[in-house]
Each structure stands twice: as C-alpha cells, then as structure tokens.
Amino acid sequence: MATPLRTVIGVDAGGTGTRAVLLDHTGRALSLARTGPGNPTSAGLDLAVTNIVAACTGAFTAAPEPVAQPDVIALCMAGVIAAGGRVPEVEAALVEAGFGATVAFKGDVLAAYFSATADPDGAVVIVGTGATGARIRDGEFEAMSDGLGWLIGDEGSGFWIGQQVVRAVCAALDGRGPDTALVDALMGLIDIEPQLSQPWRDERLMRILTWAYARRPVELSVAARLVTEVGDDPVAAGIVAEAAARVVTNVGSVTGADTDGPIVLGGSVVAPGSPVGRLVAAELGERVRHARDGIAGAALVALRELGVRADAEVLARISTGLAALP
Image (cartoon, rainbow, N blue to C red; front, side, top):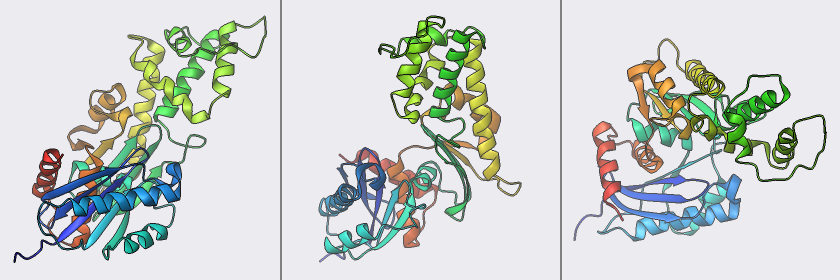
C-alpha cells in the first residue's frame, strides 16, 4: 500500500468566492475546490465559515490519489490581521469537519505578494478600491502603510480617483476649475433626477449632488474608470499622475534603504497596462512584479508554514498545476 503523501491546503477566502487547493509537500497541486464568499466582514461570519470549511473539505476529498490529512491549512483573507490574527470559529469548524491541521491565518495581501514572487523579503502594494502597502520580511508582515479606508486614507486608490473625478467635474461646473471632458463622461453615468433645485446653478451639478449623496461614499470609485475613457484630457491626466505619485509614496513608506527585494503590485488600478500602473512601474523600475492569482500565493504560504522548500521553482510548479486543474 502506497504511503500517503504529506499535504497542505492553501485557501484564498475572498469577498465573492473561496478557493482551496490541496498540494503535496513538493508544491504539486492535487485538487481545487470553489465555494461562495469567505470574507467574514462582507459575507457574515456564519456564511464565511461554512464556505471555508466546504472548500477545504472539497479539495481534500477530490484528491486523485491517497493522501494524508493536511498538516497545515493556510487561510488567507482580508481583515484577519486587524481581527487579532485568527478566527476561532473557523478553527472550531475545521476541527468539527475532521481536520486536525495547524491553521495559519494570513492576510490576503501576503497571498498577493507570494502569487508573484517566492522571495521572502520585499514589498507589496495592493491598489483597487482601497490602497494598502506592506513590507515583507522573512515571509511575514514587517510594516504596513495606508489601508485606512476612504475617509482618512486609501490614497491613489479607485475610490480616491473616482472622488477626484467628481470633484473636478463639480469644480468645472462651478467655474472653480478648468473645463474637462470628464463632465460629459460623468453625466453619462448618472441617470437620476435631481432632488435639489437652485436655478442659479448648472442643473448638472444638482444631478451630481443627488447621485453622489444617495450612495455610500466608497461607491464613487465607479467614476475612476472615466480617466481612461476621455482620451487626451489634461484634467484626467493630472488625476492619473497624482494617483501614481501617491502609490509610489506608499511604496516608499514600506521600502527602506535596506529593502532591495521585489515590489509586487496588485489590484486593478495598478494592473499591467493601466494608466496608473504604467506610471508606477516606470518609476519603480525592474523591481516591479505584478500579482497574479491569490490562490497560488496562498498555496506557497501553506508550504512555507510546513517548513519545506518554497522557492521560485516551487511557485512555478504551483501555478502550472493550478492551471491544469478543472
């Protein structure tokens, strides 16, 4: 009888879905399972726990050959660091489901970092709706920057860009700022009738006021894409340039003089080919790597927790194996 393989499970628990991959100790991906949202903050604790356990169970039971119970389950999710580094309800539910593994709770930012590089020392900046930077030392967080939310932080993020677009349009309609193609672009997003009337003001400004204050502030991020849709517009170009400068500042705050590892960029705002991403990559140079699939990063984190080799060759093996799984 064959000796069962030593295994780990890496989990990428996101706001829209959860994925769990079962790997052997060499980084060979054996099986993958997908379930619903696994972020307790956005999905609620009970649903998140249910989906995480279902994903782990699905990955384990789908193994194509006899395997031992996983030694480690690396669970990567947003907000876990702020929550104290663990979610006891998840641990209890995994035990109840029959898992005796060590559960390592890690931030989703760490999974993003290790999706792009196996280097244990470097930096990562995730810029989507929000913006968070982190310095990674020996595979763990050593310092963080921003990620403070739309009200007091997230500079250069999708929300920040969208807010600047709305501000610029209002300034143009008020005569406080230059005319911009963003005016027509923003009005194309707004299909709401104004609930305010000031005959001495531009009616479009009343529509913007009604639209903007009828939604959660962070939803202004919907306007961020307009800076890429208006062509050669100086105001839009200025917003892009300032967003890039703020992202670079974020990077600088977590990379000291003694940090010379890779800089991983993740999130739609700094994706390869995006306007902000191009400027940031040009400024930061050859150290830039782009985050790929968070489940690959979660898998590498799991192997690191097991204490086995988790280098660039292993990361490539993980990525190739994941691509081949149904």
